[in-house]
Length: 299
Image 1 (cartoon, one colour):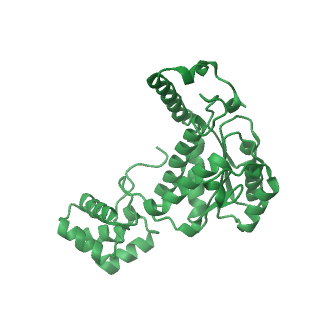
Image 2: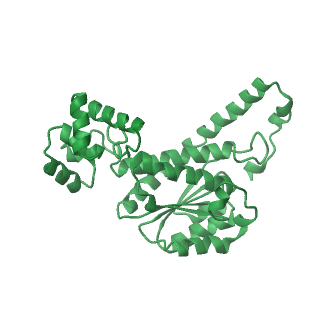
Image 3: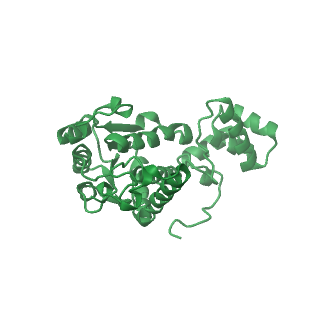
């Protein structure tokens, strides 16, 4: 596996001057981001299909072990404050259990039976989306989880940093992030992990966009749960409607903090009409406001 190979370019890494060592590591991180580029078409197709499943009240399910599991969990937990994605519709299947998020549980990743069992216990179904992440692409727990989920009709996405690996063959959508050898041989928390995080950022954000949780580049489903976010919500209403600051505050109060509803109110809609329009369009603010899509998705 290329992620386990030794790269002679870094043979003297630890004795280089600190700045030179960091420059080499930084360059390697940039290569990790670039490695996601060839997978963009597959990521886009997977996200579009995932959005269709999730629109049917499905769940986002992250499966993995070690670093890969932690990267998936980091992505998932941010979806609730950022996009108001329901917490109960995000599931983490982690080799070794939730405790493995903060401590290493060696050997847990080798149990395929636990991977299959975790899918069965979660009652995975056809509206669910299962994302299996494994740098090696050979992690038994994660492969088994993806295989079992696919057998049950869920949409499956397999992410790996090595070509021709079992998890890519197991998934409906194989996502290869070919990052190659690490600066510190085998330390996939580095380049492979960075590429995985970029994938998660792109994949989940595109899903939320397709579900109508982004409008004009703003997180209009955001939960304003503290003072900083309340000020941000006020700014968003101002920017999206050109109303006064006082009107923005009043709209948010009338909408009980619902940002989309506040935008509708600040745009001149009556409360009942605004609520009905949002409900009619599944919470998607653009059509609720009566705006046409400005760029075709196929463009």
